[in-house]
Length: 413
Image (tube, rainbow, N blue to C red; front, side, top):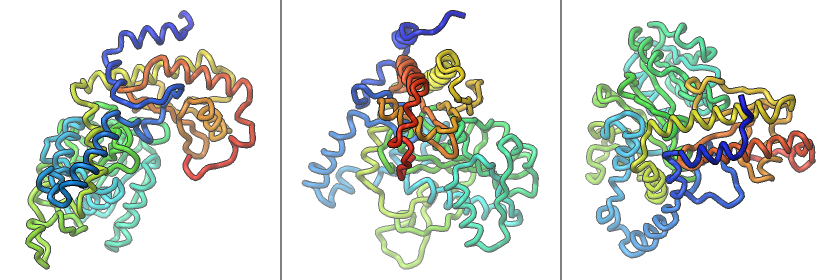
């Protein structure tokens, strides 16, 4: 097989049906950005939109903006946009709060539907905040619930009628390993077990089909592949069959059936709106709406196809260019089995990543030794993969990562 070169990657970019979408983002010159799986790039429309909301809507119309500009409708309006990306109906998704709070709300709702079961099943690769929320909720309920963790590959075999809820992140945040959502949902349904999926590393980069796979509950964040900005609001999904049977524990005024009646007793809204709590974060939601608009006229199947191709290209180029450099592939080599990222283990992974960032290749690090490279198909090019691997090769060959400044740990890795 002939060696790959930059010209080959440039040719792939010419043929890329999503190449036009890169123009929707602010990508600094000289930067290869491979960290959209942690924080998406800035859409070009966002700054002007926020300025308009601040100066025109808030500045001139003040509190009348809630009605005049539809601020009050933002949770449902954005939820309907996200629903299209995750295989859900518009009235099953709402944007609100953070992923952590939404895990708490939905896990509580799911457990209330299975009062005679006490096992919350998850895996050792789940994102820690989800596990923390399960632990905290179990302590709060004090009804004998137990969070049980097994290896990712052992989930299906462990599902049984003793389990109340299976709570998983579809894409392992460290390695990119992908769970088989359809198979897990099918086994869970056969045993009367409910499912709660975290789509933080899925929505916007994969073809997700919540209703088609029989998912019960799901959450996700707005600041990764959805490009909503730092700390963007999260979203939650509740399958229609559960909407009128569930009760979530956080009684807030925006989840009240008549919030502006100012009644002293709580009465939940019907449908998905009962999962709202406090006042919508208008500025953050305005930014997220710009991020969601970057998916207008985009074929989700093309996104997934490019995501897989970018990952395959990086694996092939690292094998070609970085042999015997201490790197170990930590992600599945088969594209269908991973999300939109590739991770490599290295004994000095943190320092290597800092050296890469100093050279304009931005990925990130996850303890204890993983370097993550994320691929946002809307703006990452094939030539970016070549350039990233070329810098990686240089950093490793020259031992640049040994410099003291690259070995000092920052607060965020």
